[in-house]
Amino acid sequence: MADETMIYPSGLTLGQANEIQQGLMWGTRIYLAIAVCAHVLAFMLTPWLH
Amino acid sequence: MNEGRIWLYVKPTIGVPLFFIAFVAASLLVHGSILMNTTWFSAFWQGGAAMPAAVVETASAPAMEAAPVEMAPAAETNTIEP
Image 1 (cartoon, rainbow over the protein chains, first blue to last red):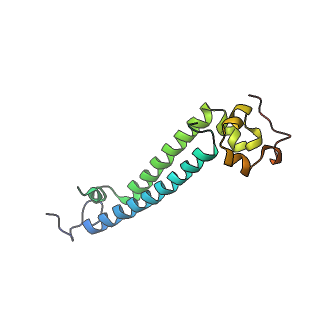
Image 2 (tube, chains in turn red, purple):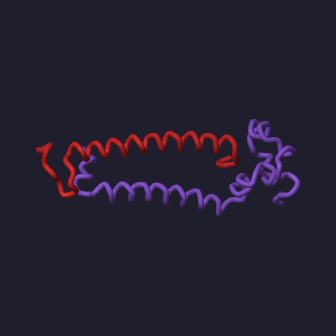
Image 3 (cartoon, each protein chain N blue to C red):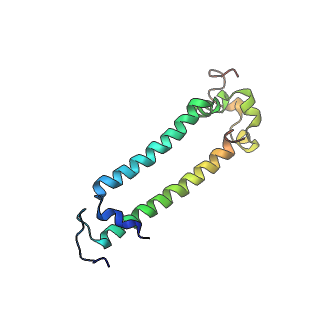
């Protein structure tokens, strides 16, 4: 089992690595939500896919 | 599964910028390809007046109400022949 205080080769602990992963995942979700809105608008207002 | 463990072995100072660059590169590749392989994409950026006639006919009605062709500033100067 991983040790929460162990320093891994990247210089981070398991908790820090998970924190970075969570931040990236939320950033990606927000990016994708904005992208979905943009593509809905593009579908409505341009000949794309018509 | 615990995907966050990747940051135990990949430095975030390297991996995070690579992740962002990959995202941007994929987006630019797709949109650039559409721009290069369609006529309406560049016409759309030019403005509603520059859209080819066939494109104007197929465009949705709300878009035409929001930006009538006659009122577009580029209507008289920039027209693309289909």
